[in-house]
Length: 198
Image (cartoon, rainbow, N blue to C red; front, side):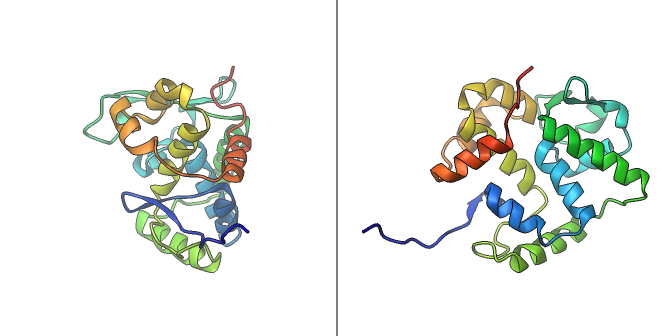
């Protein structure tokens, strides 16, 4: 008989890495505006300052090519080898971005990082995620995306690295040793279907 184990949160450097099912549960406790913002953050892997800047530059988005071209002015991180970056999107990622720009036209505002932190933590507890709000923060969406990409398509490490603006060394050190169950990996592959394909 197989032993039952307690479900634990995946936390890397004090930041949560969600599973697809945890993400869906979290969304179930958030407003439509927060759902929209979280979808874009997860599909793009943008840092919060990049996301805020992107919200005023729809021209950086190329839906036909399924990508976002972040220029130097958008990449606010000082220590990075990538001065410009192209973000790859799935079809669902494009739909999330299209919906985001529609919501902005309808006067949606982007909350501050502190407001987001509080809202996400409360939603995580309400959703009864494993270990509650442990590691919950806005940057978890970026860490979650890169973790999902690495576990589902490690052969695309070069493409993932440039997409996320990380060096290969950072990728190998931080994202190649995360444990997901087989069911979680199947869910991740469904979520990322078509990523990096023409």
